[in-house]
Length: 75
Image (cartoon, rainbow, N blue to C red; front, side, top):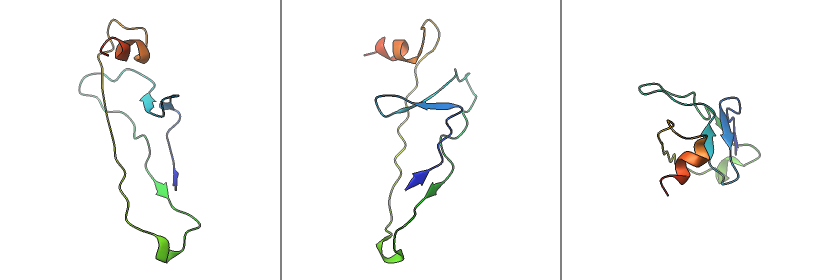
């Protein structure tokens, strides 16, 4: 499968998770991480239903240098 990830507003870190590149103000929303999933080179009979699991976390940005420092403060 191929996903059209938004690499302008999001960055995939070494831990495999994707992080938004800027602070999201209260009440605001981010751009979509992806908008399309394409499945190629698979016979129709082999296509099956699948789930895309979205896992989200947030942390207060104020008082921290970057996202890693912010999350380190709560672990």
